[in-house]
Length: 289
Length: 206
Picture 1 (cartoon, each protein chain N blue to C red):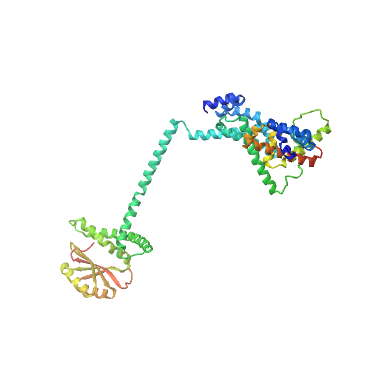
Picture 2 (picture 1 turned 60 degrees about the vertical axis):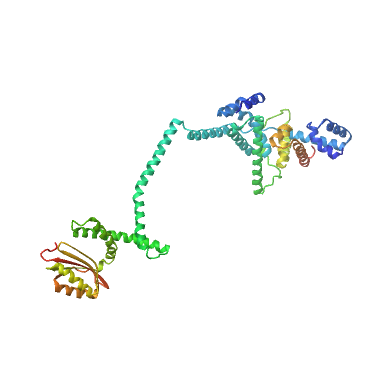
């Protein structure tokens, strides 16, 4: 065997890691080869130096510090486990109570938001009915829904006042159904009324014969190109809700004056364009209080 | 733990068996016994591998905490001490990488002559027969040897520390480092050769 191979085996040779045959080979070679023998000696000295390194003492605080950390670790584990695994007879009732609390809370929340749910369900219905004829783009629809929301409020306000009026005017025998019909029909009008509040005039005409007056007024309005929006009658009174051009109003008043005594409620603002007029016809002897 | 493993533990590793069982049951005080028994050897392994006293102390702490955390996983397949030392070797290896990276960043060369930081460390006085001069000379040589070991690459450093400094067998080293016995042999030889060459340069005559 050559020196290189021998020298490579020297470490194992020193540590007794070679097979019997290999050991014998090295023994033989070392007896003859001084170079390898030197290498062998050098290796032994090196190992001796390394083995000669003194063992150091660890710092005196090491045990203490280790145990402190270990105890901390043990404490954490215990606490965590305790939290997870309460004895069952404590854990289960807690869970039951917690579940009940969640259920009750959910129930109350639902109860609170239920009317809101209903409201949002009905409002779209109204707005949808109104917007159906006009094919609106989605963006526009949003706006119109919002508009109708605002209008719905106005309608409500107008409807409320109209409702009161109708109930006052209606004969007791009249079925409630009709009142409701009027209400619904009145709703869009009331909306217009709400919008055009400024332009509504009120006239009261006192006459002897109200029945004749009724027909006369219809004639007059037709002549003046006015539009009868609504008419009602009960007891000794007749009501007309009329749309007329503002320049014809004067003429109307004059014509009415020919028939009977005309009382005019103060108009809120100078009318422009079409005006809405409420005409109340009262049979004399039965003045409105 | 199964009965079979318990039996194996009992027959092979009587020394640590009882303590291990206690620790697995959560007995923290029993663990202290293990700490006191093994800390010195563990510390020295780490110190020789990392070359740093403070870092070695930290590694030992981390090792023990890791052992405590995982003690229930110890199944008795190997000796408890082997398991312990394997962990300390691995953590030392990691620590060494950290130190090297840090040193590189700080542009400090590991091959520079080592500062005499060992000067204040308490040492076991192996022999009181040596004169003061001899002791000083010995100290100096030791520092140079340590320096040479430090200059080795990680894997070579490991084998020389475990074999020549700590005296583990080839089999034990093979277990700990998870390498074949043949690899241990060749690596060890190359490590020793490297130390020898280094010593010749710094000490002169061996």
